[in-house]
Image (tube, rainbow, N blue to C red):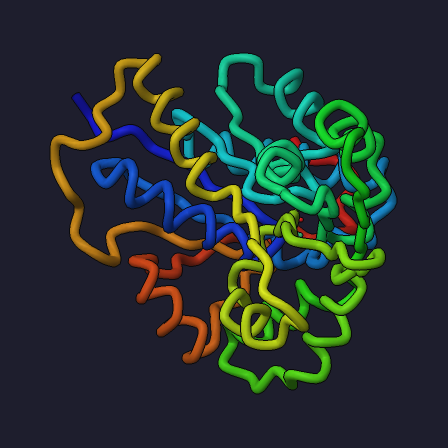
Length: 280
Ligand code: DGL
């Protein structure tokens, strides 16, 4: 039985935090990681344009890669575009990434939780509905960060990321109310776990940071099992998986080294320009 092919997609490098968990859970799979870096960041895109963009990129990816499963490792896209993707590609199973509000609300003792996300995810009805359904008994602070995804990208490119900038972005997540204070923070953008060590060091007090990647990996394994795909028979060696960038630009040396630590080798990709309004 051929190894299942899994497409992991994000606007940039954040989806690597999801990719590494899936690769651990399904080591026999063949992975293609796609960063829509030509359109990064998604956080500021108007909703309608983002739907168009993501569906257009998937038209190319599905035709070129023929994945067995597609993982949208991006909250900003998943909270908006998943129904459109499922309608456009009815035979392809999609696994999305949405804010882990439910586990945060369940685990919180103070019942004060924060959701740290992009401005796009914070604005979505989907996110507000999650909160109404699963965290109505909690005080929820929705924090839309303007800069963290970019800072995480800089970090992956080997650039110095000043502590003060990170501290400023996470500060609104920490709320006090009398003796009570925030104890759970949802990492609702896949870029943010890339900076988790810095978050922990710079947090004004210890909290639990919730990264949904292990749960997403379990879901992918379930989808593959439902399709009778082999996930564990054979372990592939490092760097057999491919990473491609919609800008068509080759990653710089620092990023190439970083990708290798994830077991990914960059491959050439014909650019998918953002101004393109129709994709065959
Ligand atoms: N990694 C993406 C997410 O999970 C978004 C980053 C961006 O493009 O703004 O939301």
